[in-house]
Image 1 (cartoon, rainbow, N blue to C red):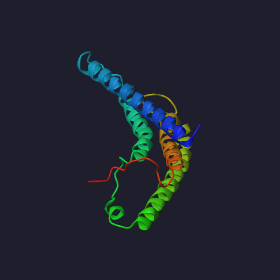
Image 2: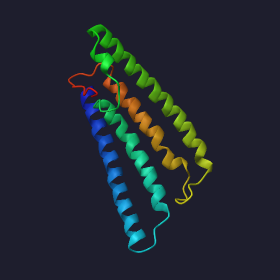
Image 3: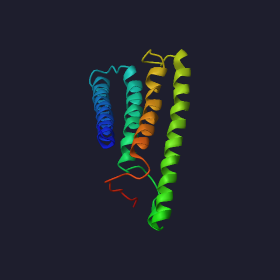
Length: 161
């Protein structure tokens, strides 16, 4: 199994899970709107579950956006320098994202675990469970950035407008 196939498999898995969570979230919101305006009784847990679903979906899709170079960035400096300077800038960006994502994985994991003694207001589960989507998302970003490397092969980079 090559590194490209591992990267492609991880990318597809993360994108599938993120899209599935987003689709379930849309269905949940539609259910909530139906019960609120048609049945005049909205379940209290639907808003909180929807909020956590959006957070989980975005956190998982974040790594796919980075791999596709569809994240927000300022690239005019990178476009206007020579090849060596461009390579140094890309190495710096790769190291910065790698270190920041690892740091946020650690910090958010500690925070999520520390929230275990509290229960969510309407779902009635430990707050650690929904909050674990944040360190999982940052961990996925770290993994995808690490696998991609500082100089992606066979990939067009979408430049910022």
